[in-house]
Each structure stands twice: as structure tokens, then as C-alpha cells.
Image 1 (tube, rainbow, N blue to C red):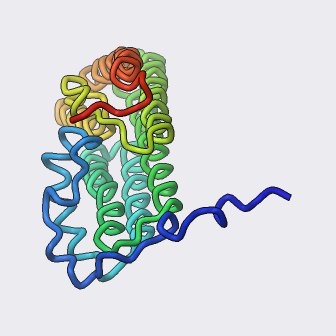
Image 2: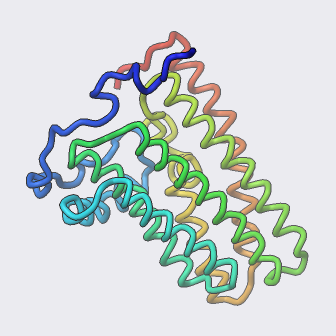
Length: 252
């Protein structure tokens, strides 16, 4: 009989309790941010807002509950976009992005980071982003001259997002640390390397296209992000080979 993999983990890998919730007010931006793996928009904007929520919610809910709230915002955003309520969808997308940070921050404040929490957080973030891209593509069909082009652009972007997110997660599993895209991919980090920048640009596209009544800008944006994602993926392969080919992360 094979050994239970969870039984073999040391207690510190399951859950910790080093930071009492009553000290949550001491956790301020950028203490809770991930300086290496956070995208530009996430680190400089979303983390400032999420930290405000996190220090106030840490005494009222756990990290997994915050992940549940995050999922609700993400699904609500996809439904709103799918049924052509684009501006309200943008509001939900931004709340989803903020609470994508809140759950991990609450775990760090409470000292209760866990592998299952990280697993659920990753599934929620990656799955919801793909759901949002699909909803945008389907909703855009009625606002462009060629409905098939909207679906094609959406599927192209989904492929690029899949490759980027998979490479990030594989890097984390191989090196036991987040991929340092904010340091190694400063240019791509502004518009496609992380979900924060991708969802920000898609939000801008939704607002512009909704206010103008013309979906051509959003369609162009889908194609541009898809192309950038594929180029980013190829560049990332080269960067990982160059900086991590020896098996050890480079010095900061």
C-alpha cells in the first residue's frame, strides 16, 4: 500500500500559526505583496487595495472563505459580460482581481498558509480567467461584423493564457518559488505576462467598446493579447533556460 503523501508532510507544510490575527493591523502594503512574482498592476495598485481589505477581514474569515468570495466575483463577472452587461462586468473583474490577492494575504496574516489553500486559490484564479475570456469572446460575437472572428480570437487568447499560466505553475513546482516575472519580464509584465495586466487591458477594452457601441477595439485587443502571450511564452522559455539552467535561481 502506498504511503499517504499528506501524512509524510511535516506539520509546517500543512498549516502554521505564527502570526496572531490580533496583530493584523501591523500588516501593511507592501509587506503582504510578492515583490518577485506579482505583476506590475497587481503589485502597485491591487495590492494597495487588497491589503486594506485583508487587515480588516483577517479576524472575520479564513483564507479559503476569501477564495470563495473571489470565485463568486469571478463567476459574476463572466455572467454579466456574457449577458452584455459589460460595465458591471468590469466592476466584478476588478473585485475578482483584488480578492485574488486577499485570500493569500489573509493566510499570511493569520499564519495559516496551507497547500490545499494554495491549490484552491490557483484553480480559482486560472479557471476564472479562462471563463472570463470565453465569456468576452461569446458576448463580442454580436458586436462585430464577423462573429467567427470573435470566437477565433478568444480561443487564440485562451491558448496563450494556458501556456503562460502552465509555465508559471510548472516553474513554481520545479523551483519551489514563484516565477519572478516582475524582474525578468518587465516589458511583458505591463500587458500580458500576468493575469492582472491581461484582465486590466480586457477591462479597458470592454469599457471602450461598450461606450462606443463598437466591438472592433475589443476584437483587436483580443488578437493583440493572444499574439503577445505566445511571444511571451517563447521568451520565457529562453529566460528560464538562461537564468535557471543550472537549477538554481539567480541572485536578485
